[in-house]
Image (cartoon, rainbow, N blue to C red):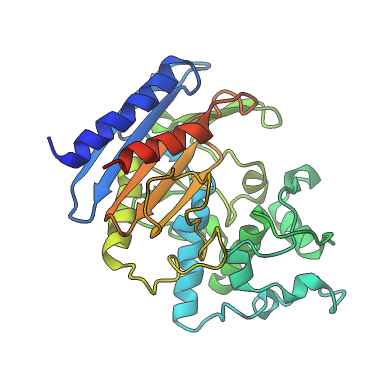
Length: 330
């Protein structure tokens, strides 16, 4: 048994304990190193209501906000590298109609880089889906809605707007864009981990996006991607090989963030024992991916912690941190 498998098995006991305690239905934990050694463990249930299905290493998950870094950040940075956008230009360079009835408002000065780093005054939460279910009309509404400026916080609006910019540049909706090898915009319900018994969609969500705003928009830049533990490890393995110190996904924009990703800070999701050269991100549904460039390994913890409801203390925050500490223990 390799050292990576030993650490994985030790960390996975925490996941199994959470499952046995009824805090999460199931989980998948995977680790990969720079040399391509990898291991994946799975346990529990992919679905508990209205039917029961076992979790497997090949179960597909709604990755939620991991979409921000696996898809939207990658596309925006690729376009910047080819000169199609300027990261320090305002979004209006691509979205000229953004709040165009008042050319002096603050929204028109927000830049691509600020959105990537969540350094904008947009609110943390905005229930766009409560304004209707017409995707075209909701896009137009969002571009003209007057937001009250507040402190810079983590906000989905940043990446919804980046997604709208991608749609303008590519001339197609996000759901019509290739999400990349190993990822998809939906999943076969027979192979997917269930998420929530949704109040407004009146069904248990399996293989369709959990995020309310993404569902109403029929695809968006902040959520909607599906994948497996293997596809996340594939993504991480490539970044371990290619993302050098100058890569923007590693370059800090603030004490907590790089371009798109989080970086270590006190209390962050990756635990206390990862190196300072670690990036990571989590998803509301119970997902997460962390890449430690100094130690040369990455890990993903995928759970269906919102199944059948989000209104329950799943303990996902301390679980993520404890798993990270085990993975990075000496």
